[in-house]
Amino acid sequence: MAHSLLLLPGDGIGPEVTAVSRRVAGRLISQGLDLEISEALFGGVAIDAEGAPLSDETLALALASDAVLMGAVGGPQWVDQPYNNRPEAGLLKLRAGMNVYANLRPARCFAALADASSLKRIFVEDLDILFVRELTGGVYFGEPRGVETLADGQRRGVNTHVYTTSEIHRVARVAFDLARTRKGEVVSAEKSNVMEAGLLWREEVQALRDAEYPDIRLTHMLADNMAMQLVKNPKQFDVIVTDNLFGDMLSDEAAMLTGSLGMLPSAAIGDPGKPGLYEPIHGSAPDIAGRGVANPTASILSLAMALRYSLGAPALADRVEAAVAAALDAGARTPDLGGSLGTAAMGDAILAQLG
Image 1 (tube, rainbow, N blue to C red):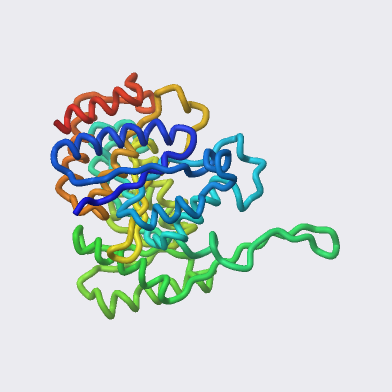
Image 2 (cartoon, rainbow, N blue to C red):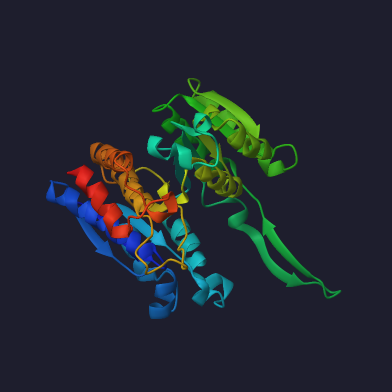
């Protein structure tokens, strides 16, 4: 039975990098991959065409697919949209609608890029961290939220950080299961010293480990200490599980250890058998959109993650990742990595290695 992939190219450089990933998928299809590809509007371009960043029809297409590969959303032309109708609001709606509660964000430093990192090679060469970030709860979704005017004329902004046992267990279970395929180690990050929700997080992650994963070595670390440790000794980490807010910040910090934000993919998955959402972690980069210089590698590696986790083709995922590494070893570079290859040419270099 054919698997299905929905492309949501979005805004800015999103369409450019997604087009290269479509070429890679096309090459795999020509080599025997049974995959059907469709495409829909999403983000700012959907606001312009349909009045909202995510239409009900597009969400239905996502839910009917095996995997969704997104490009990027946002840009200056949509900053005056109401808060709940901005491109970024469409992304939150998509994540919630798909119930993809576990965000997998690898921070892998390819050998050819170790000297491009902000840290010395000794600290980042062969770095391979996997963040498992809770994605549909916490302060980004908690209620009450909003901005109000008080009786004395002051304005007050409110966001609520809230988690339940089941929300914590389901994302921690993903982290523990993935750790079993790696080194069998998980570090859980929170702020249990000052936040009750953080204390609950720590206690429930530990309880799940004790009940179901006694083979996993679990340690706990305060999120601010982890921020320091990531730049002090990043290779001490393998799998990191944390909440929505801290995962957002810490994984971006780790991204810069690898040499380029343009190199890093991500996956958002939910219950087994449900569609996954895949996207590069970089933004829409409107300043370089349309110039043909955007690095497509993170999008291609996001496709590889889709092959691994949603499309039933882990061996092809390995091939795509190996092709990226080989292209980099052969000297393929985009301008953000100190090279001269444009978006399409970088795709050509990776396709040449893919065969």
